[in-house]
Image (cartoon, rainbow, N blue to C red; front, top):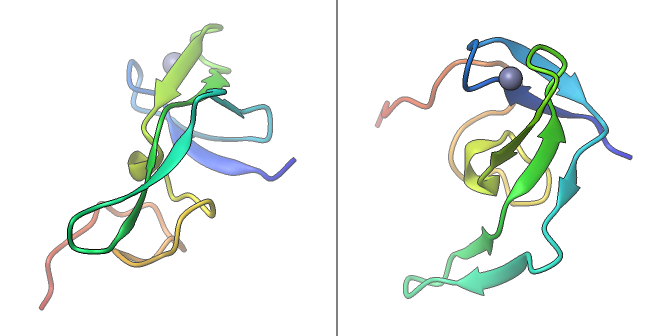
Length: 82
Ligand SMILES: [Zn+2]
């Protein structure tokens, strides 16, 4: 499975994992302005907390959605630079 980048919400540490899974009810919805959007949660066991965390797909540098907001090549937070 594909490795994704995650940030532990409790310890603020970044990690990569291929052990993630998506909710069975994950679905693609199209918003009023025509953008596709995933609804549902991605779950991954955290190597730091030893417990699973859940993330909205929008929070991830996620290849499941088109890279239409900010570059995924680094871990900087999104910025408005236009
Ligand atoms: Zn954690």
